[in-house]
Image (cartoon, rainbow, N blue to C red; front, side, top):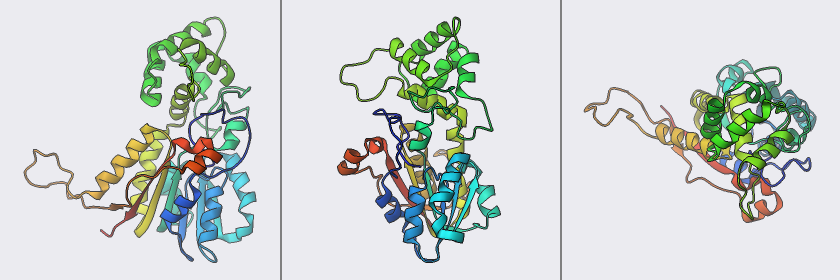
Length: 323
């Protein structure tokens, strides 16, 4: 996708497409001519375009996105690559089924960029950005699931607080949840602007704070609405099936919840036996499936200067090893 996954720095002010750490992504994937690549989070297709250029003249790419608008934009942007590109509207949690059905049974590279795109942030009807004037929706695929406004209207204070703590690591989760429940007794909380203003009133804002106080709440709602962490785990598991030996997995994450899942997955799949320490003899039969490509990487100071939304990005890579 195009930008960092948080809503920091007034990210909804303008629409533009700056793929995060594009050079590092292509360097880590190392696409070659004739290779098969999979971009499971197209967004604005900035990464996909770079990958196709690097794998010219005959490398092919399967691009997925749950957002139908992203598929339409990507089709226009990537039209010059002709039949080297295959696009599907699907969530990356569906990789194991969608990729083989599209003819990509074994691939040389798989990219998961877990950030939001600038287009989504700027769409007032989606509710991703703090200043969106439309209904608080937050669904990537607007044809499935419950909008965020429905959760705010129906969950009890304890349930909302648990959601904000689990998916947003929000220290003022209880106070914010109680404020939402109290507010909706008089008027529904239905727009992003309403929710952002409500959180601003509910929590203290330290002087000099760089991020909006509602950042963690918006993150938590978006993760819950789209079941993002479960989709991430499914997408990572699918990489073990889809990547051929020597194939590369690259993941861009934007908050600690995502990064912990990715870090733990790579660490586990690097190991052989994963039996508990108290088991004297291995009974799991687990074999190493991945080789880490080194420590995580973050954007350069220059990239952060030109694209402040990238500052929370963290890139991890791994290579599939032969069974």
